[in-house]
Amino acid sequence: MGSPEFTVLRNAARIKTGKRGALLLLALENAFKENTPSLAVARISAKLTQELGGGKTIVLGFGKASLRMFMGIRDSMGSRIYRSTLIVPEDQDTARLRDYAEILTAPHPFPDQRTVDASRRLLSTASDLNPEDNVIVLISGGASSMFEIPAEGISIETEAELTRCLMNSGADIFQLNTIRQAMSSVKGGKLARLLHPARVFAILVSDVPGDSPEFIGSGPLTPVNIPETAIINIENSIPSCRGLMERIKPHFMLESTPKEFFRNVTTEVVLRNSDMVSAITSILNETGEPVINLGSGHVGEVQSFAERLYSALEGIYSLRGTGFWFVAGGETTSKVVGTGYGGRNQELVMRLILLARARGREMTFLSAGTDGIDGNSECMGAVMDSQLAAGIDEDQAMHSLESSDSSTFLMKHGLAICSGPTGNNVSDIFMGYFGGMLVI
Image (cartoon, rainbow, N blue to C red; front, side, top):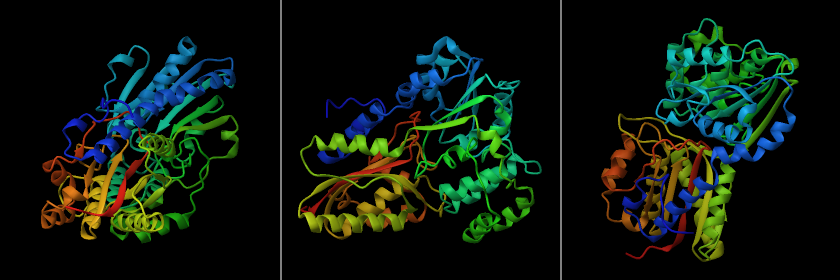
């Protein structure tokens, strides 16, 4: 797997883990280097250039990966680009690209007036378009909060309040982005009307299970139909947010954008969770031990997902009779039940390893958010093994879970993985080793 040189996982060398955990960290690091948004976009640039019309070419981008996506366009298209405007997270280093694009910033995961101002500015740079003009739109996870102009009658503060309520109540990405589409004047296909009649090329880095353009960045350039029953179902399944939803529901924009506005829109997903999963599978194959690719698209509440995953791993072991590596991807959900620090990935690591410890199994497990952020913590995830878990205080571990404070606990024990913003965003990665009975 090469020498342990870490540039993405910045604290990897200081994490307290065994040989298998170190291999998982190196596999994740190498997979990041093989699957950058800039490389993914650059790979399609030649084809894209051939499809452009004869007018001016404008590049618009918004989301956590938009900066690196733009690097792939800039390097291959150069002077063909007439103008570029990007909206990126506030914590990304943009200095080296400011000579090539107008770079705006907006907060994540909750929008505010800065979001609206940046979005209006971005749209103003793509006005007065004609049928020969080209607009390349770079969309990635995080776009839902960084590119937004609310529907008339909904304030950005109210939109942020409902978004926070839904996220803290465990809404999944499909429920969350459906409501975002309804609250927006630019999401759910509505941007297509604003860019008409130009030729529009939507290039996407997917952070949603299934990679549906309808939900990536809340689908600003994808035809979307939001039946009222979908809103009612979300309202009923998350009663803690019902009062707030009832208040703003009369202003929801549910009407579909007419099909004529999508005739000149081409959409391509260039990087997805399954690309990372496949890369890690290939890297772990170099160990010579069995590797099971469990696929992408895994979803569910984190505690129940941990139980299902553990049960599946036990089932595989009983059939094979030998230890094995495993890799999967997706995006779980976690309800916030305390005032601590952490997120779904760090919680998943603790829950899964505590299950292995309780059943006396040898197991090493890593879970990480590919954007470098896990919930409200400073880290992307964690790696832990059942051998080490045998020496920790289980009551303290459970208390941290009950306080939504997994990150504090894992940081204390030197198990949290911290990278800072990665400039990528293809959901979460789950990987590990499952073996026989634990010998301490």
